[in-house]
Amino acid sequence: MKFFVDTAETAEISELASTGLLDGVTTNPSLIAKSGRKFLEVIAEICDLVPGPVSAEVAATDFSQMMREAKILRAIAPNVCIKVPLTPDGLRACHALAQDGAAVNVTLCFSAAQALLAAKAGATFVSPFIGRLDDIGQDGMALIADIVTIYRNYPAIKTEVLAASIRHPIHLIEAAKLGAHVATIPPSVIRQLYHHPLTDKGLATFVADWAKTGQTIA
Ligand code: G3P
Image (spheres, rainbow, N blue to C red):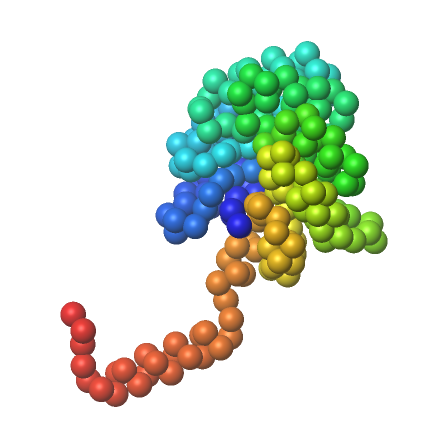
């Protein structure tokens, strides 16, 4: 499973990239607003930090303007992945961009029918939002299961399922068990993945016992 980080904070991205475990980055207009920085500058900086796909979302909602914005975003770096909303205009833009060789992430996917459309439009990634479905009392993980099952029925579909709106490690593990190709994870949840109390306890014991030996390795 590929790990993307869901943030526009370059300091966080730089730190995570240094672990060697980061495969890409996703941003959205809300994350850009939260960063307080200029969109195009932030995307350029992120593309320098991470060689994998960096999702940059169009701001427009109509096809023509989406295409104009996508042209500017694509010129930033070869690893920019154009993010478009799952709307008729967004899917039309997805199709046109994919035909032109661009990587496209179709976002705001909340149904299996929408995911089928994204695949037919040639999306590189489709982003079903797990947490936001859970928030309204629906089953976000059931959507991941449905999309993975449907895509597997059609080997010609190359679109990858990018599990988004992940709120905690269980979301990630369940999505991985279902075979989602990618997860985009907030930095706070990535940090949670490392920890287990028995790891901390075991390490404390090993460190204490090693000290008793009076030895050094190097
Ligand atoms: O970036 C898209 C998605 O991951 C947003 O998540 O937490 O705002 O629902 P959230």
